[in-house]
Amino acid sequence: MNLPDGAAGVLPSQYLEHAVADGVIDAGEYKIPSANIQPASIDLRLGEVAYRIRCSFLPDSQPVEMKMKDLIVDELDLRRDGAVLETNRPYLVPLLEQLTLPANVRGKANPKSSTGRLDVFTRVITDQSFRFDEIVAGYQGQLFLEIVPLSFTVRVRQGLALNQLRLSVGRSVLTDEEIVQLHEETPILFSSQKPVTDISTAGGLFLGLDLKGDGQGRVGYRAKDNAPLLEMSVTDAFSPGEFWEPVFREEGDRIVLAPEKFYLLLSEEAVRISPEYAAEMTAYDPTSGELRTHYAGFFDPGFGYDTQERFLGSRAALEVRAHDVPFMIEHGQRVCKLTFERMLEAPTVLYGQGIGSSYQNQQDTLGKHFRRVSAGSEPA
Image (cartoon, rainbow, N blue to C red; front, side, top):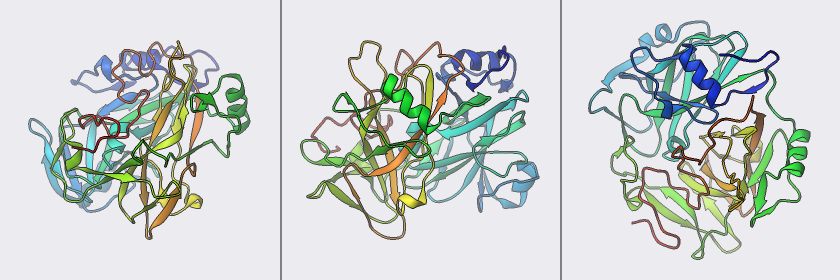
């Protein structure tokens, strides 16, 4: 992979290309398209079959295929027309890509942003593993994806990419002190197109909610019950109104989340990731309240970044679900945070620059599967 001595950081696109060429990431007869290589990650694609399983699991000391044998309820063919995945049922799919990692290279998987915005819960499982989405240094073997649609019944097909893989070497994560210093030197958080003067950190950089919304007070969307089937392989195709209802703020710039309902909201601040860094939205912290605040996690180098500074940062989409009881959230409330990592070197391509990025400078939370909603209009 041509890694330099003493290398430390997230592997950028040019090193991922080396990894594919050297067989570190391999899909056998299924060639890995160059379009699947992102600035700091590579897309992982569904294989030929999905297994409906009766429960989720971790393999611990066993191979995944051995552990799953007595958990399989049904087998679905993902070739040609694909298969329908029902809500609240777990499925396990062997992925096309396999890994032969060098001893000093580790991996981390996360759902693609469009996957999280559909409330499709996914996580990668590897052989002899006791953690989801974490791939140990030197791992050699197959990758499996657990899929649980939570709000919508979906159709998926072989070759569809629902997750991404990021590879790292050495110490890459920035400390809170390093995040503060980075923001002072090259601002990473903006409000009203101005750098935020007083950022808050605690194991990452906190982001707050935008609950002022647009001119009509719309702050986001809530998933509808009993929506139609959604084909995940097509984009810009579905009417938002069949799947989503708009959410409007209450007086006092707040909303009350209904238990177990799925919401799409926006961050109050805009984030700018310069080419030398990557970020990840961290896992749910139970001390912040009875809610989960995201699924999709990776922020690529170039997110919210424009060399000509025509805009300063892009806001983050927040996928939110309250648990157990109704839960009130208010404008500016801190509900999530970003951790930052150094890149091994700047990628040759950046997010939003000629690679078909869907969410650069986003002003709306709906994913790429839906027809665009103009500002101030209702989902149609």
